Amino acid sequence: MAATPAPGVPTIPLNNGVEIPQLGFGVYQIPPDRTAEATRTALEIGYRHIDTAQMYGNEAGVGQAVRESGIDRGEVFVTSKLNNNKLERDDILRSFDRSLEELGFDYLDLFLIHWPLPAVSDYVARWKALEEIYASGRAKAIGVSNFNPHHLRNLFAASETRPAVNQVEIHPFLAQDDLRAFDADHEIVTEAWSPIGQGQVLGDPAIVQLAEQLGKTPAQVTLRWHVQRGDVIFPKSSSKDRMAENFAIFDFELDQQQMSAITALDRGGRIGPDPDDFNWIPR
Image 1 (cartoon, helix red, strand yellow):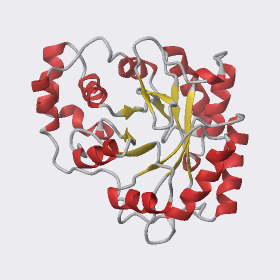
Image 2 (cartoon, rainbow, N blue to C red):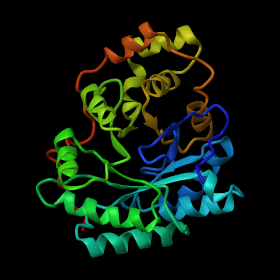
Image 3 (tube, rainbow, N blue to C red):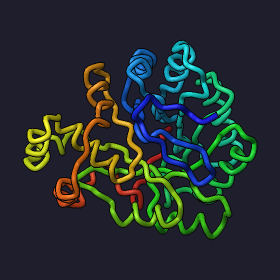
């Protein structure tokens, strides 16, 4: 059953027909002992899409919150990601089993390769392990994170299964228009991590001015820009007020001039590592 977002939150169809809510809640850097509370609060506000990862160490808190929320499991879209230290098929399959155990779920809605790690691992082989998981029905969709077009082309050459999503760093200082266009041309939905640039974009004069004109906050204006571009976003916050603020972005629209003014802020300002150079494996 497809996840059912709160009224006003649009969904986007993935290339296998699964519907993903365009706005979700991210739990990156939320401590494990606070994840259940934060996720429960997000669900109370109306979020129906939660993004976690094996690397975050807080899958258990996400699962606890979903189970205790009283919301049917099928109404909450949950994503997790393969840890960078799981490189071989058997380790990958075991780690996925462990994620389901931590979450207390029978399936995941979406499971991603977290980083390509081009210098240390065969990401095509890892993708084939995810295909096995997908074929088992225990992941309703599979995809990748932090993949550039040349990484994706290598997958296309070796597999008939296209990633359902590509989760990459995107915000007004790093618009990633070429990558987004590549994804769209290949029926891959683009997800934007760090959609407000870890807060760096919120003080930009152009965004502040638009927010004042619209009676919205800079974060709301920025998240609305993402939504209108077609990005899937999952801003992270531990503050209930900020969670509610981030959720309240469906009662206004940016016109084309306003959209273009934000896109023009692109300066290639990457905050996270370049996927071509990042090869960190946790011990």
